[in-house]
Length: 346
Image (cartoon, rainbow, N blue to C red; front, side, top):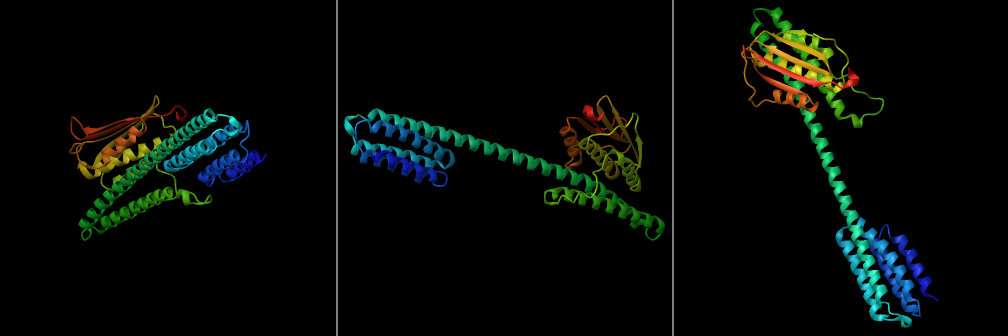
C-alpha cells in the first residue's frame, strides 16, 4: 500500500527540483521508483510503476538534454540505465510478473526522450549562432556606414581647409583682405564639420539618450547642394548645378547618399582635378535619380588606394543603383550614379 504514495511523493519533489537541479530531480524519480518496487512487490505492481517511470523519467531527461550541457544529459541517461539495472537485479520478478518487456520499454522511451532533448538543444544552438552572425553582420554594416560617413564629412572639409589655409598663408602679408576671407572660410567649414561630427556621435549614442533628447540636426540632402557649392567655391572651384527635371522629396537614405556622392566627387575635383570649375547635373524622372559630376581638369584614374571612389560605389550599390567613374574622352573626369527611387517617393 505504500508503493504508489512513495512514488507520488518522489514525483512531487522531483517536479520542484526539475528547473534548477534536473539531475537531482531525475535521481529522486529513480529512487522513488526503486523504493516503490521494493516496498510492495505484489502481483501487477510492476507494470504501472514502470509506465509511470517511463513517462516521468522521459520528460525529465528530455528537459535535461535540452537545457543542460551534453555531459549532464549523458549522466542523466546513465542514471536511468543504472536505475533499471538495480530494479532488474534486486527485484527481478515482483509477484511473478516478468518486467523485462516493461523495463525495455522504459529504456526505449528514455533514449528517445534524450534524443529529442538533444535535437532541441542543437536547434537552439543553431538559432543562437544565426542570431550571433546576424548581429555581427549588422554591427559590421553599421561600422562601415559610420566609416563612410566620417570619410565623406572629414575628407571634404579638411581638403577645403587645407586649400584655404595655403591660400591665406601665401597672401597673408601682401593681401590681408584675401587672407581674412580664407580664415573666414576655414572657420565656416570647421563649424560645419564639427556640427556633422557631433550629429554622428549623437547617432551613435542614441540608445543612451533619453526620450527628451533628440539629434542636433537633420542629415544633409540635395536641398543643401547650394551650400555645398558655396563651400566648394570658397576652395577655388566654381560649381555649376543643373536640375533639368522637377525635384520631388526623396527617401532619407537616398537623399543622404546622393548628397554624399556629390560631396565626395566635388572633393576630388578640388584636390586632384587642377581646374577652377565643374558641372553637377541632377535629374529625377522615371523612378530614377541620376547624378553626374564632370570637370575639364587633368583627369586621372580610379586605381588609387583612396576610399572616395570605393565609398561612392558602395553607397550606390547598397541602394540597388549603378555607379561609374573615370576619365572623359575629351579630357577631365566624370562621376555618374543612378539610384532607384521607390514609388511612394515619386
